[in-house]
Image (cartoon, rainbow, N blue to C red; front, side, top):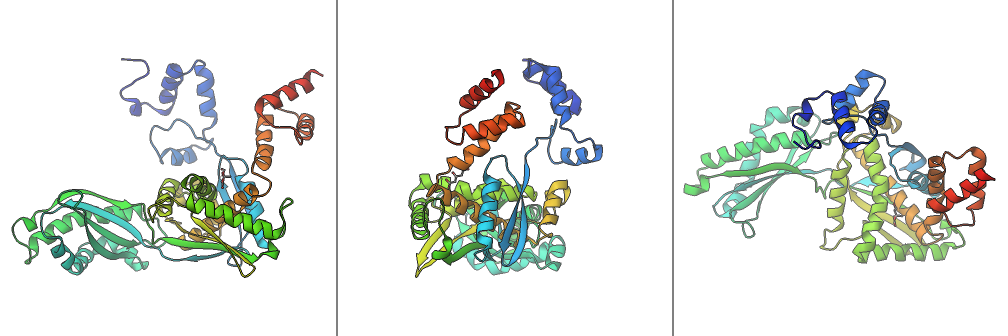
Length: 440
Ligand code: MEV
């Protein structure tokens, strides 16, 4: 067997896994073992909790945990926890938060909280017959899963609706059952998937028992049951507005010009998918950072947002801007399915602290906080792009990363920062300059 493949890897203990990797993939195995072990939690119980989240864990992967203060959302002040590896993101969020703090803050509103699950199956009958049975099946389903939905019902959630969809014109005999859920403060993935798998058995039984169906109309073949991460009706609106004059100037761009350039930039992202992708990436810089910090699933939320951004057939900016009657308004509607109970939210020690920092919000409140952070991020990025350009701030942070990498002393940091105020920053140029300082 090739030394780079192995059977029974998962059966090795953690140090056995590390040793196998260190010895077969690295030139300096002892250093690798030491380094990976150095990121273990000293507290064994805490490490066990983290190890429980995934498989074949060998160490922890540190990411910066930062905060952006001064967010005013619907009149309430928040300091927002953010986990992100990209420099300038937290600084940009903080700067936009402070800017809007003196202009009324962020206004947010939950527009819907519907989560969705799909059961795909093969069925040969006339689709209209299924549609006619929708109501009856909905009651039957709710009755049959009442033990499973008991707790969720008590909290005000549960199954909210049922509809059949016909996919047979594209894939022979394939139909879909879409179930709408309310999952209160939980993300609800396990709840939804459990109900969906049960719904398959229940639909099979229902079709057999249904008097209006005969022959092959009673035959049911399950394909798959899983939640849909596209939740266009689990939606939150975030907006900021002020008079154009109040915008003030930025760099050497005065308020009127800033408003006009800003809106044009957003319009470009509405019509051009290449720009829209980068524009929306800026939104998700903020969104993902809060989603991660609060122990939620950023892949689900991004996947959903990008589908939503393409809902009319073209990928577009998620945000909008309008200047009308001397008023500047910048807003977006974003689908965000998150939870504040269950899952990692209560198990991850820092996610738990993040939620505490936010005042232990409900899922609806967290949707609003996340949307405001995404809009702040988008505002800061677009404002920089249409005024000073993005590189100025970015490269300042990048310079600090380079200096850390070069183990620069405080005096070197000062000298380098001064020199590169007016010179173009690149790794090689900074290294050259530091070498020169060191050999002087
Ligand atoms: C960089 O991470 C994000 C930006 O590119 C977003 C944008 O261009 O709007 C600055």
